[in-house]
Image (tube, rainbow, N blue to C red):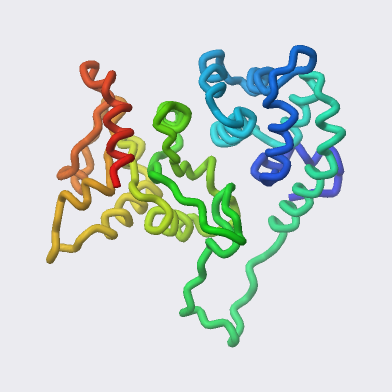
Length: 293
């Protein structure tokens, strides 16, 4: 990535380059309702969020933080340059001027990390010693000096199903349930092996895993790996217990399927959103399942 031009290159730097310090300071500027200057609602509208989505964000402790996370998760054009452009468009040049030094520093660190090449193996390094990603942090809110970030559930999904995942975030995190979901595109820092990170999250950071089943899911190598890995953490054949697996994995169907339901999940109870008679209870049932000890 070319990071020489101090302004134009910002349009190529993804929003994940901004660390928590900058995001929190953006919230200090944008979260308070302001009758004179534009607040987070104006920024969210420029990002393409609908009226209902913006109303749902109002219950969040930091709506600015949620808007930034969801924008970067669902929009490939969510870059640092685009964010600065939006702030200028809503006439919040004061934020750009005040935070620009911090933003430039985050971008500089991000670009340096992108340029780094993995070190060559040397005799002093034992490849048999496992590396633990949590030491340096693998999620956005990880504190390298404190306990690792924990979640109620890991969401296994493919990109084409993210609209439903976004609804799941809204219904389970931003309501009275207050659950904490691990959504890879939103919560995970870039730069490490995807397989290693997902294994760490599923096994050690998340109490359960919700599997969003669709025709596209059946064609996804990543979803296949995540599902089989989660199943491997359950009792083996000698101590086979379908109940133990059903407590850890929760398959969800939200739209009709043309392909057969995956056989490896056939013994699990499915949360079916496609039935009109159960839609009213769907989120209640799923929230209760994720809240079990």
